[in-house]
Length: 463
Image (tube, rainbow, N blue to C red; front, side, top):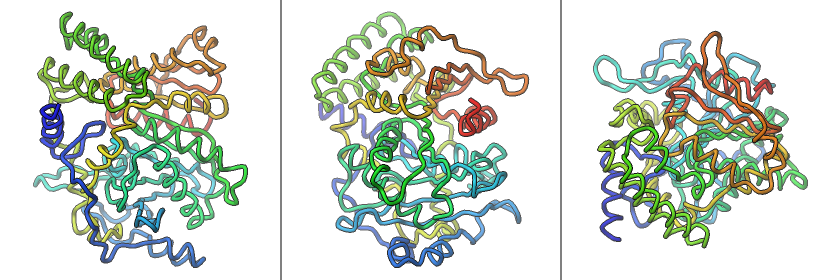
């Protein structure tokens, strides 16, 4: 088994960046952070000097590649969520640019992993600008015409502590710990930005954040009745989510039907899947993760392709990971107030710290939320690692959602953007199940125009 773990670590670390839902080489202990010149906002919140805190958090220095007028208003800094362990969460907040931010929804974006930086979402998916290579192969920012920040106030949070710029002396080991830290962050953030407290609030995320998003939504729901600061939870969105691994890790038939493996390989994969499901049923999640990893390695080897975010590509596109270079630029670091804080140093450690709950399911939490809030579940139809078929299996396994019978009697419909068919939508009570055409794991990256319209329609209640 040590051979397997070593192989996984080497495989994941062979690429430039941290790959969500895959392990990488990691340190055994969180590194002691060098925090000179970093902006910590909790002291301003606690001293009721939030105006000064907001002013200091403003991103005023220019970002490489953007011309005058291309850099929107934004704020960045750290919020301390647990003083005992020096746990600090980094955020980069972009107020809505094309609508009134004082009435627009507030959205948090959470990346997966666990341990991936949400700055991937800002700079590679749907932020106001994206990291690109210029003509000299330097990484610079370029305005994004399909930014979600056009229609919503979006907070990109490095979550959990240990991911991206966020750091701690005690890495999380459970989903409860992650939700507790994130809730503490939100209470402080809304205190720092009180003008947004009454706005509709939507947690969004992708991949392993398919577990983070339901957890923080349920945490808010549970805390709101007695909380002095109530968060106006209006719905939630999950893209290509790893919500219920025992249901959604259905690679054998998907890969066979897309011709990426043959009959023998499919049957071998089905056997591994049964072992994985058996361990999940017994709550032996570490053993289940080992089987999941074994299945992963088997089909990657069989495919002779290392890219598992889309059936249409074989190798990782170089531009998919250049955001790491951009956030490490001295000009970027100075602009977003991180000082000398390490970036991504503990991302792999977060993955391993949560390995014993990695394969645990949040299906029941999703069912609970479906009874009470609008829930958008969207997938790219080319995704392998968190494919649409897995979401269908999760819905099939639901036992308490009152809309399940109606779901199986409801036809889906084409979703058009102008004259173009962007995907397919099934709407049943609070569920919005969306399959995006010609898109991989990172749907907003594959189909930015369609994704923006889907997002806008959902948060406006039109979807």
